[in-house]
Amino acid sequence: VFVELTGIPMTVNGKVDRAALPAVDARPELAGEFVAPTGATQELLAGIWGELLGVDRVGAADNFFELGGHSLLATQVMSRIRAAFDADLPVAALFETPTVAGLAGAVDDAAPGGATPPIVPVSREQALPLSFGQQRLWFLAELEPGSAEYNTPMIISLDGELDPEALTAALTALVGRHEVLRTRLVAGEDGVPRQAIDPAPDRFDVPVVEVAEDAVRAWLAADGAVPFDLAAGPLFRATLLRIAPDRHMLALAMHHVVGDEWSVPILRRELEALYAGAALPPLPVQYADFAAWQRQWLTGDVLAEQVGFWRERLSGAPLLELPADRPRPAVWSPAGGAVRFDVPDEVTARLRAVARDAGASMFMTLFGAFTVLLSRYTGQDDIV
Image (cartoon, rainbow, N blue to C red; front, side, top):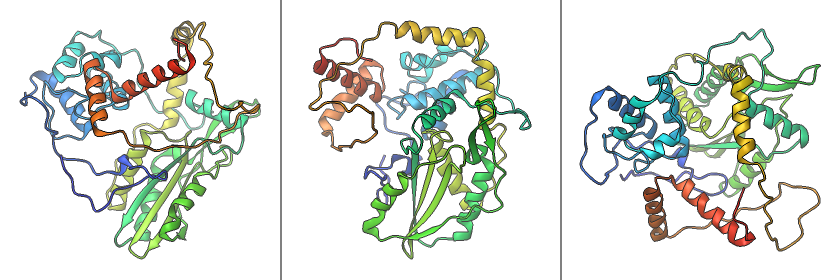
């Protein structure tokens, strides 16, 4: 499918910002004829795939990964399957049966009753626990205060005439809509960290900075290095860069405790809708509700089973004895670099063929190749 663009959106690192690319309202041309889904299970699955993959129609014989699916989307598919069918299926089921018809059979054969209880709102008058992910990041922030390692930047290009008041109103509504964007992590008198949710702002003002076009990348890099204080907050900030009268960039940044890779397209989509004047329905649950649900569910035997699996899996795991060209420093540092390179088209095509034949995503295939490389470097056959 070909879509004409006025320009290619880029990230701070100079790579294509794929999340900023417009949705493609067409079905990719796949090998074989279109086979319409039959039965309620196939039709529901096709609807789930179409919504998550952004394609108009999904056939019964279509392969999830050939339609553009990957591991992250696979997790979302299985989450929606649990909600729609009350079926307990592992993510691996989608890799084993990556077509609508095949997965429908697995859904119909699955044991009823998901393994997880529903997420419900909890009182904001009580102490709000951190999720396990937030607790991990809070611990790392306490270990190394002032680190910008978990900053998550997000850039939105705004070409043409800009309405500053509409943008301010959109950001105000966005921050008011998502409690997590105004959440801080604070330690109580007992030393246990809790979520503290600040009130929704009456107005979320966005500072405007005049930046020359050749200085944009340096400005974005400097902003991305400004750390967040998890206790003081806020953990979400926005700056409008004015490059020309008709060209702006909205630089958003948040700490990983309030957002992740799933969050970025959601925030972008909702911000665009709010800027256009749309009214979004209220959210049934917030992230604090998820954290409370996770803490209530992952306890006792359920937690012991999960932790026990990984302890057994990692038991006796060797250290990676990676040879280096200079001594490792005595104290760990996040200092490093990135090298960008292009993989030739013919190599990419063969990689996709390997992934398809193995029933794996491209990420799994490349990660497998990376572990083989590490094995060659180290002489070890157990790579962790």
